[in-house]
Amino acid sequence: MEEDSRNYRKRKSLQQAKEKRVGSRGSPRIQSGRKAAKHIYSSLRYKLQSMIVKSLKQARKIANLRKENYRLKSKDKSKCSLSPATKVRKLIGRRKMSPEIRKNLLLNFAFMSGLEENKKVFKKEKEKRLFATRVSNKIIKKYQMIGQLKNLASNKNYKKALETKKMHFKRSYKGQKNLTEVRKSVQKFLDDDLHSCMCPGTN
Picture (cartoon, helix red, strand yellow):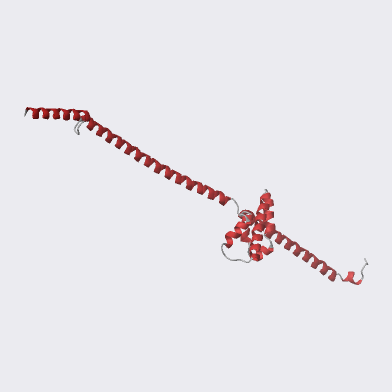
């Protein structure tokens, strides 16, 4: 019995020493370790959530900047005039057209682009009005294509050009009318002057 009790005390002392060295579940060291791990986990979780929120904000900012860049590029493209060939492609699209029609369309757009370039040369209002007057000829009016010339002159200059042309036509018509009346008066005077007809060259 004494030997058994001695062995029991020995085993118990060894077990207590082992628990003291390693630490049991209820020891203060294990509890403080779990608390520190929990604190570290919550801190890392908070940092991760903050990084996710920041990344989402950055993604939205990048998307807005891309949209703004696209709008600015679209504005720049709208300001730049298209080439005649590009205008023909946009007008025709995928429709099948004969080469002759394509050439005529290309000639039309090239001619209009040339007129627009020539328009930029004129700086004075009088020159611009004269240019609009020369462009709006009778053939353009006959086929009712004056509306296509709005890009070549402003509405104000274009209207002034039309008014100037009408005034010039009225003046010419009025001058011709006066000349015709003078001729009729001279002819009537000669017809009524019987003395000059019967005895020409006498006083």
